[in-house]
Image (cartoon, rainbow, N blue to C red; front, side):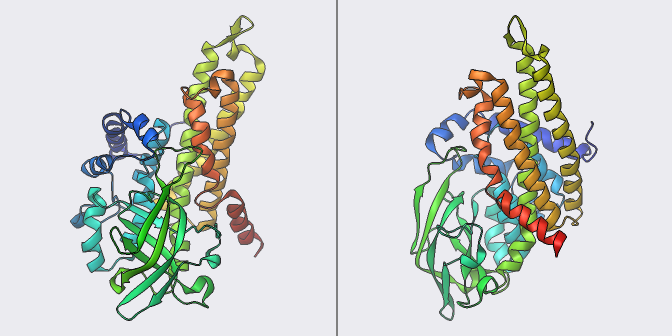
Length: 380
């Protein structure tokens, strides 16, 4: 079916993203995967192309739009191109949601110009070695010292953690406050006591730098408190819908792309003297995946429109994230199977998509967490 949620400006923007990928990303991506990190230059190139800070006000160098469809286009094109290591969505939709939505005027002037140009790369540090998705289990803590905080603790699995210049850290600021005693503090590159651990060796998404972060008596100025004191829980809940929809948009885009690749493969590959596409089992597999993708696409596009209008709630964002990423996982597995031995070779896109996409059902809130959110809402 023809997608009806985009107009001419969106289509022009998609062509801009494709041009950027062809020129600035695809020629270098194999080397970035070997290096375990993308270059800082590609972030500056993304800034020059107007792909960063889409929702930031124009006076700070941003795009000045709250239309999530532009973010969805970036997610779709990076996913279809097989370059998830360039975490523009994390920068724009996750970190940007906090920096743009919660910053004071003084903070906006300090941070947003570099955020939009690519000079200041963003990350959010929530997960801890023993905490997972449990906000109440956060141990990183900040002690109030009058005009500054003293921050201590550690974080892990932090995407953009190796390159990041601005890190939104979730820390305990009221010791006995539980999830209601957490605040967001922005730690900046070069702060004394802030150290990065190893760039973690992951199963997939090799070009995406994912690091451990350590905070040892880091002096964080009071001016770097983001949002309300002890208000992190509400801020996180409010903004997680954006993150989850971005992941969902990437998930369905990958599934559709793999389906297209596999349709072409089974038409050309022969077994028992005829193309695989002539086998009923193969046709049924393709039919099932195509139907699942079409139904999922309709729901995700509806969510994109709802979110652009500021009307998407946490429950439907959780539905989108759960369903689209689990579909992506199933489609990747089935498409790899239909490729046979070639599907297991790294030179084939389906193999790379299989390992790169496995984390989709984990980060941003695991599938089990999404089901819990949905179930609680229905049975409250």
